[in-house]
Length: 512
Ligand code: MSP
Image (cartoon, rainbow, N blue to C red; front, side):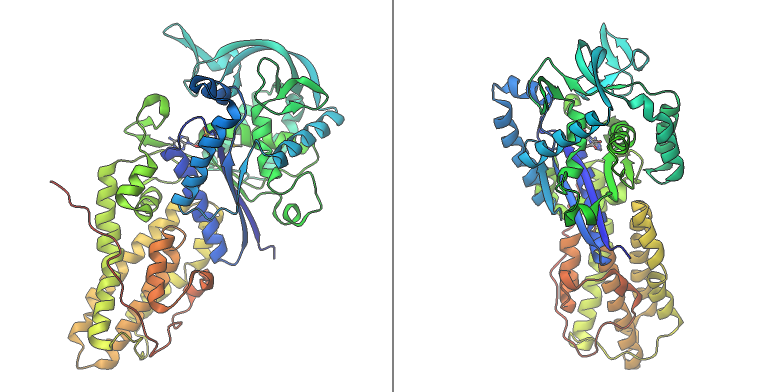
């Protein structure tokens, strides 16, 4: 069985500081990467920055800084964000690195050699903010300004000599590819959007620009630079040492298992990217997942709207794990979701402090008083014990499939449900009333500890630091964690010492 897994985040434009949307794409990818590692996979997890194109050139000009210098600065803040978010990425790519430039130019040459690229003239609409070409029916006029209907960003008229990729030729082949790979695009609703778009007819795609210089040069024609999306998408290959197809990284990890992206960049990933790859005789990725937007109220969080919740400030104020958990819990994965500080605070108090935190504290302090901080000797499990123990064990295959289908809300909701059941189990079993039946008391404590262990493993991809704090009471280390062990009801060894823990989550004081 192939135990390699490759997941990527979008590479971020370093045109401004990172915001919550970026943090979201990265955190959800990290949850999947971490889960797969727990499940014994060798995971390659890539993130990085997308540094070329007119958008970046203009942002640098505004600051009066040379583009490379400008990118060096902001790219650092994204690299830093990966650390602050505790991402387990194995690589961080910048499109200004030599390894990437070489890879893009190579892909270009292959496309050219195969007759997939030709020189002509582009006249049409272009949005610098989206770095996207739009046809006449995709734009409208608002207050005297032409904007893209889908993104709302300003478009400008472009007329210049340009190379074109023969995208139109790939229409039927793409449709066939989507049909043969029904889960290539998820969620399903987005798949339908893409198929309808392709069926409505594809035009050849302009893949070079002449009127500015910040980008990778077209081999053999230095007047042109390569379209920033052809450049950017290739990062997923550059990180695997493409064009060397015989190196182990490429052999192990291509085609990618998941490109995690926001729904706004689906067209590039689900249409252009597989078309470029098929044209170059390379395999398309196995999955493109277009997640929804993080909204502030009803609006997309964005720099231009000034409604950004700064992930760095939130982490500073509340801690990282609460933010990671909240994003997973609050946003129904695949859909848009609105987040607020107030709801984040409620979530910390109810789910994290009252539910998970409280369960761990009360079971351990009960153990301290009655079992001297030792794993107790258990007696035979009774029906109530087995119900809760099996609930998690029996769900293992489903949980695996949830992650493999990016059903992150199903995964998270199951944990919430288990936490509720675990607290209820402890309440209902009333071990404090069992002092005359010490065997039963010990068994209840044993089961409760096993449940804490299992739930902490399930939570580990979402809140790695806190769950590990809990697992450390059993002396379990991150490197020893195995998802499969949630099936085991008797992994804790009687008479082993357990440790006490500090408060896991501080409750947020609320004024109301
Ligand atoms: N550079 C391109 C991606 C190239 S990938 C080969 C890009 N960069 S971006 O910085 O503008 O956006 C990166 C990701 O952040 C996108 O997936 C986008 O959907 C996501 N988000 C940006 N704002 C967002 C929200 N408000 N909510 C959720 N994600 C959104 O596009």
